[in-house]
Image (spheres, rainbow, N blue to C red):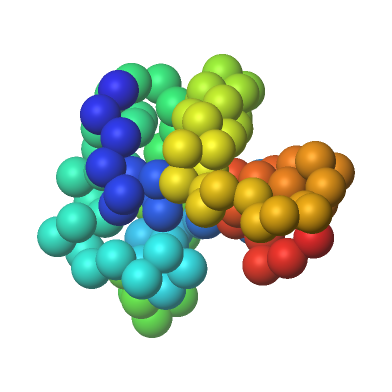
Amino acid sequence: MRSSIATLQVLRTFFDDPASARYGVELMASSGLKAGTLYPILNRLELDGWILGRWEDIDESAAGRRRRRYYRLTGAGERQARALLTQYATLLMPPPRPGESAEVIGRAREAVSLGRRGS
């Protein structure tokens, strides 16, 4: 799988709440990506089996809006995404400062890889 920074951003947003399905506008807001970048990534992740997409079943006229396509990580996708994000977090982490403990470094790497804003 190609792993651009944008793809990593999209994958990381799914870990904000892994059990929840997300739709495009929500993912754009979470990742900071525009539609022209986001939707090709979602399509590729879906084709690769990392995410499942489904159209919601609504009456658009009654709802007053178009139906949404919701996406969620598959079990395999979650495992692969977690491994990929951890790998890139390790590569992108700055070197430890003198005196920084391995425990602090490990928590920081985990937080970065799962998209949390701190540990």
